[in-house]
Length: 438
Image 1 (spheres, rainbow, N blue to C red):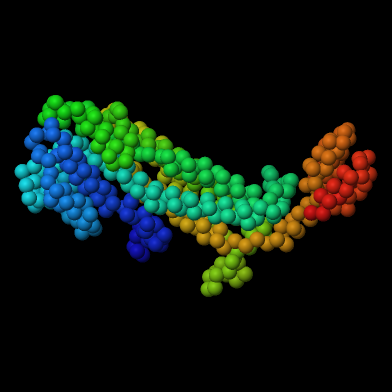
Image 2 (cartoon, rainbow, N blue to C red):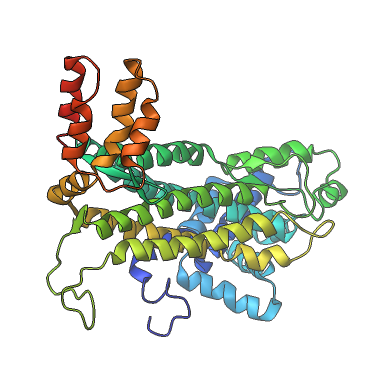
C-alpha cells in the first residue's frame, strides 16, 4: 500500500504478512469473539449456573461456526457497532448477542454473553492468545532459522583460521567457525527461554474480586472457575490482580526479545565489519544496484537494514517493559494504546530477521583475504610465543615479546630471528617456526 502510514504495512507488507493472522486489528477482534464464546460455553457447562442450560451438540456446533467463519467481513460488522458504542469490547458483546439470538434455544440466554466481566478480562486473555500465536507461528520459527544458519556456518568454517580484533586492534587468531558458533550458542539459550514463556491471564470482573459474579451466583466457587477457564486457553492464571493484568508477562517477553534483538544486532554489525575487511564477499544479484552514482558498489544493505529494524523493535520493547507494568491504582487506560503496538514490535523484529537471513545467505568466504590479514600481522604471535617461553622457564618472557612487538610493525622474518636466538630446546623452536607460517 503506497499510502500506508507505516512501512510495515506498505513497503515491507510482504515480509510481515505472516504476523497479520496473529497481530492485526482483525485478529484482536477474532480473539475477543473466541474468548467470549469460550466463556459462554464454560458458564453453560457449570451445573450451578442453573439459569443457563447445558448446550446441545447443535448449539455447540453453531457457536464453533461463528469462530471458524469469523473473517474480515464479520470484523467490519463489529467495527460498525463500535462506531456507535465507542467501546471495542462492548461492540463484540453486542455482535455476539445478535449472533447467538439466531441460534435455536439461545435467544433468551444472550445476557450471559460477557456475564460479570470487565473489558480487561476479555482483552488481556485475547492479547495473551495473540502473543502465543505469533510466537508459535512466526517469531520462534524465524529465530530458529537464523540460529540454524549460524550453526551451519560454524560447522562449515570450523577450520578457517582468521585474525581477531579486540579493542579494534589485531589480536590472537581465532577460527571463523567459532565466531559463528558464538551467535548460535547465544541464540540457543534465548530460544530455550522463549519456548518456556507463557502469558498470564487475569479474570474476575471489575477489580478481580468476582463481586458481580457472586451477586448473581454466590454458591459458585468463582476463583476455581476462573483459573480453570484461563488454563483451558493455555494461559497461566493470575492469583491476584487489579482490574487489569499487571503486564509483567509482557515485560518479561519484551526483555527476552530485547536480548534476542541485541544478539542479532551484534551479529549484524560483525557481519558488516567482516564484509568491510574483505573477509566476506557478497553474491551478486543480477539487476541490483549498489549505488546511484558508484557502479562498483555491493553494499551490505541486508545487515544494515537488520540493524535499523532491530533498533526500532527494541525501542518498542523497551517502552513496553517500562510502561506496561505501571497503572494508577486499580487501573488507568494508558496501557491500552501501548498494547496495540505489540504487532509493530514483532513486525520490525520479523523484518530484521528476514534481512539478516538474506544477508547470511549471500555472504561468501574470501580465503585469500583471510590469509593476507594473518600474514600482515605476525605480531599476534607474541602471545603463543611468550607462553612457550614461560613453559620453558625463560625469565621476563612477556616483557621480551612486549619490547619486540608492542606498537611496532614487525615481520615474520623478525619473529623467526627472535626465535632462533632463544635458549630453548630445538623441538620447541621447531614448533614456533611452524606457528610462524600463518
